[in-house]
Length: 270
Image (cartoon, rainbow, N blue to C red):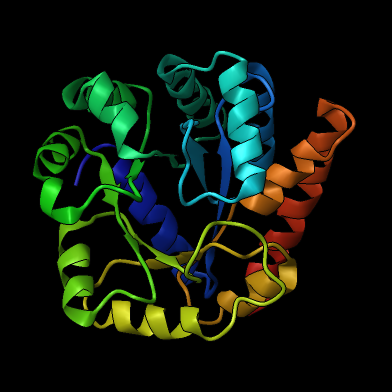
């Protein structure tokens, strides 16, 4: 194991030794601006997040709900480019020393060039990528370049995934497995429900990789609940909303800090 995938694995293992789930935050690059996004991401990492997912804004984010879609639209209208995403990764990693991944739909990476993207992501200090719409059976070229550059390839599993499909997905992935707590698009929910617990158990039966749960988690109580059965708790929409609803960047960052600190306390309450 090489590159920052080791940092990612060590970070998740350390959380397990501390008898808690890791807290994984998500914010899109370029939102509300490139510099403002970098400041917000640093604030989340400094306030208790163990790992950060940085979204690569997309014009048709099919699995993202209206809050993340709105943030992506702001970033795209602001002119964000892949070079800005990579700069965001670099500055977040260099400032905090914590693992940073890119979460992206496949089309922008394919257009940019797989070898180019993996090489530049590794050079920026990235730990890997989460690719929610890349089918495992079409991922060989990506995985070859990712492995050569010491990057994790994180695939997404859902409650609808059959057991044989889960085994296929987890065998191809690295770093951790992203378990979607609910069917449907991202967004906050009143309750995460029991589907996530069942999915984690089914996934763990196929792999030694940590299984981290996202989609629908927005409160410290929900984070504490999911932390009882998952290796990591992923929060995106609720963090994006703190910035989207804020009167200005400074108050948004303050709200993001406060939410992150409360979520970090939640994952330690399990």
